[in-house]
Length: 116
Length: 111
Image (cartoon, rainbow over all chains, first blue to last red; front, side, top):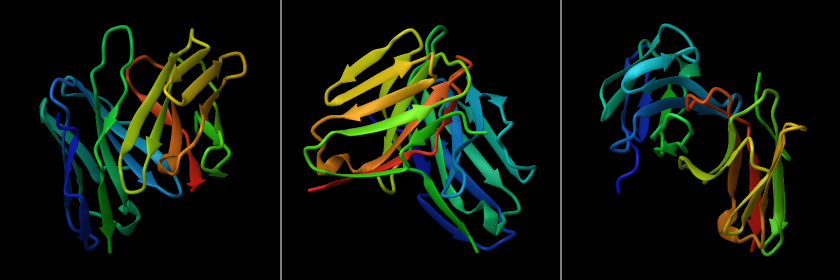
């Protein structure tokens, strides 16, 4: 079975440019999570969706960041304009959340973003 | 503030030895999960222990949970070089699927 698929795997761009990260969750999973990982701050939850609806975006750093989930099989995380401090590895994860128990999250291999 | 904090930050052992990592957290939880991350890859789920469970096993992994001390430990027995990775604990406090990850323990297993 295909896991969580993220694209691109690597992105290098100049400050001020728009960056779009993409994620395809595992088929049948109804929750999707976007994380950012840096050496300084570790793994931070940016936003998560349940049944395509954003539930908690309190981790989104600022208005330059936005995320969408137009359907159950696709999500994007956009940074506009990008800044050097946005450089990090961005992970997408999905899970199948039941009513009474939590399920493990399945992670993609991430997008390594470098803003010059 | 960080919900889960792992200890030690780094651990280096010889192949065949056991590795123990600890996780402490601050608020009550529904469950606690352990993940592994190999260099350059995403996190992989290892084991989930619910708040009403005290111990769980999966192959060479043993996880304990002490809710009175708000702590958990992950034991890897008979370690292998392939166990070299970072290990993270993550707590679920809201039963919504949202997890809060600790900073991780970097484990190096020398052949």
